[in-house]
Image 1 (spheres, rainbow, N blue to C red):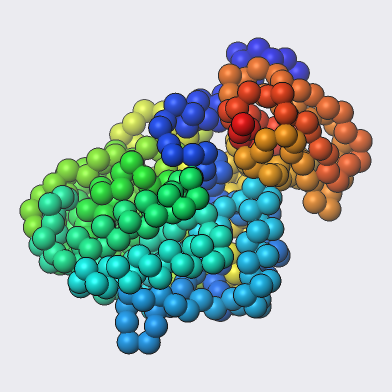
Image 2: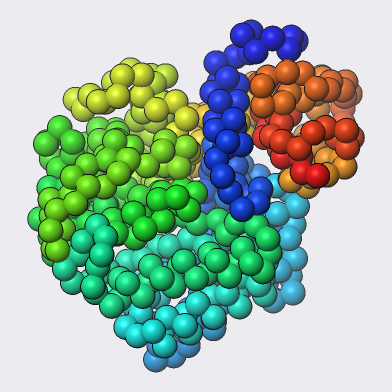
Length: 451
């Protein structure tokens, strides 16, 4: 193993470049999503314990808190699934100790948010803030659907609809309050439906593009945009001005994803056309159902997922008729998202945790992706960020070989032989603050050293 950057594998190179970009970007404090991310929604009405979530899910979004009866803005209820309040908080802390992020997802199909007044906005900000503090969440996810999108005269900016104005200000207040209270960024993800994003380009509907002003307002704050490429129900016009539906398989995934990666002029906004700027590739995840039972439509097999995402990342051939407008694709695509973690375990139509396995195959050897070798399992590095030392945990699969630690320039910082170990402790006290990579075989995990 050499410390010459030119000899590192292509996937490591791409991860390092992405890390350097993260380091250069201004931020309040070190808190970012894992890269590439495997984002899964955890249904809090299910029976799956938090601590039983597949280790490959490195971002867990808790779905969903509920408002007090008779309101759509005072969020006071949170089911804990198989937990009580104490074990739920402990489960979140355990996941975070493994370097995973846990976010509170707001909305969903049955808990819409529409803030008519400044008073409702204040209550929403306060109630969500209380939940973030009580349970120690790393941030919020906006999964706004149905009546949450009942805006009028939708514009890319300078909106006058009270619900849209109040929602944007409320999220700004939540992010600011979180940062003030914790001296670190509040992570922010969004999971809009296709019509509310790509529909704004050229697909007529009275809510077309309704989410675009929200995304635009947080273009510097969003950590991941994970459009739901399922339950679409109709064909959507893509950048090549061809209509694609879910039945087009890989073409639909590729065409819809490139729309947010390239940006477009939204001609269907009810308040007039506007320009939706491109989202950086590292902040875009492919959102798909875990299996056929997870959604009414839009399920893509593991083979179709791989065909589409390989092409998007520039590592596979064109799977259909849609041709990417960017030559070479988008190698730093942010990851994958699914509804839901629970159905990935429970569905009978595919193997258990099939979506997590698909992610591992697609992102093999990149960031937190797992090795293609059968006996080289993924591992967790915690705490992350860390100051003095980190533990590399292989779970129930003892590993042997040599651990290598590289800095963000690809320079070897440490190597340590291991022999049939379940966990190893690394002393990083002398490392300068920054982003590092721990590698065993083809498995690579990012970590951050802080002073």
